Length: 606
Image 1 (cartoon, helix red, strand yellow):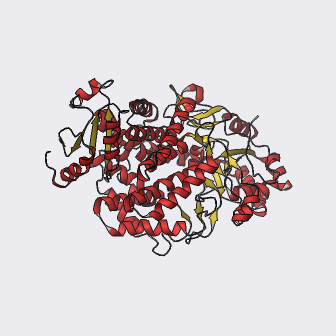
Image 2 (cartoon, helix red, strand yellow; image 1 turned 120 degrees about the vertical axis):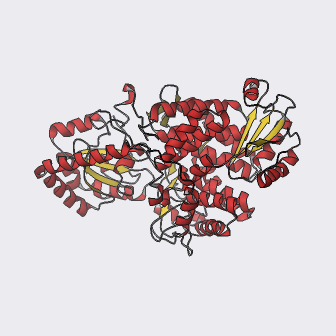
Image 3 (cartoon, one colour; image 1 turned 30 degrees about the vertical axis):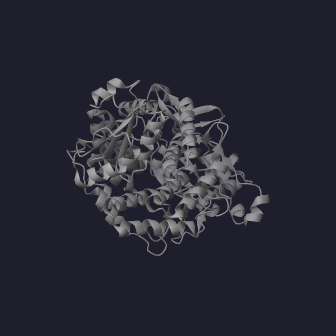
């Protein structure tokens, strides 16, 4: 029997005869000629709970839905692909579909009176306008297919993207409250990271002020929880004073990364303190010490979060969703790895490596890749690009910071699977399997509702992360397969990224990293030796926005070292490479910084 998740407070939403999203539910809709009511919700979502407690607990509504619709319930975190395709701009999402999965109508939250009218109107419209609905759906599918299969068209990467997105978003900056835009505000971590990079590259103090103003405002308003630590997901007002109270791993991991980067950039202690407060929430509330991994979220509970510190200590704690999501845990692992360097705290690195080991041991399948989530001692939901790219990125981050080669080897395996299973015609990557294996077609909706193969979607954010991962592998291996795949993943958005600059932060940064010369430091030596660790630590401390560090062990990677043109002796020794020039072997960690500065400012041969 399917297990659906509803509000933890009293409600009757379970009396609706909810179905899982699968081919059988849509077949039953077709056989009974009933429209589908799709409810997309999340366990941390305040208004989702409200809808369960009111609209979906109304006896008249329950009876009407059960009699006249095929109701399907989807968890937005468990099925981000469905959420991507049908979202109405937020949660909860309520949409009405044909038995073929085509959209009839939809909205977000609906109160009981509104739902009664909606149910009646949609039912009448569906009964009397089937031909019109089918015609419109066919036209929509044709446009989607054309967009999905659009070719690159020979586009060169727009090097201007980095500066252009910075400029466009600077014009949208809220100089009073920070952030971007004037109303509903999400936490803009990716854009803030872009502005940090922009400051590091140009020295433009305006970029730094945009970041500092936003981070300071976020910390001082109710969007931040000063008692338990951590951030809520978003605010309904521009002043950050009306948060939705759910806390999720992905939002807080990204915030932890940004505050850590800002501390590393400015040495301002308030950013260290904010980063530590976010980590406190993640470690105290979401960390599973038994398995060495993070849980997904903490429930939205307005009553709890209205209490002061003394009142919270005795109050029942909000529900924690103990699901382990691969993409969110990989994102957290990357953030903890970066913070271990920025904050100089080794425990963050140790925790991140535990996370990656758990994911590889429990969520990896050599044929299907990373599963999407793990719960109740089982893994579920293969076939999402997001899990593959964030895991590959975290593995490369672990390789760079630990020097352990097996992380690199795992990243290569995962990258090859991404190219094999997610490549789209004409370039880039689909967000789901491009050709799902038969074993998962009925549970992964890379197929349509009736089990037929359905094209995926090429999303700018996911393709940007994929491109960054693949280009890093190219720089490590000089294998043009990775470079070509990275360029194609970015090229398809060369003409469109500027139309939604709010989401183009990762794209602009990926274009920069794929078109500009990196600072590449190769360390030849055993990664466990004290001298090698000292060279690695000095290299990691370097302030450079496009840094690539590689440790190669002569005992096990002699062939790789020689193929790349480095010497096996002396060892350990570091080679600083920039602008097609490499230094002589460096054995003293304390001089790496001065050599880097001389090479990157004057491009001289050492």
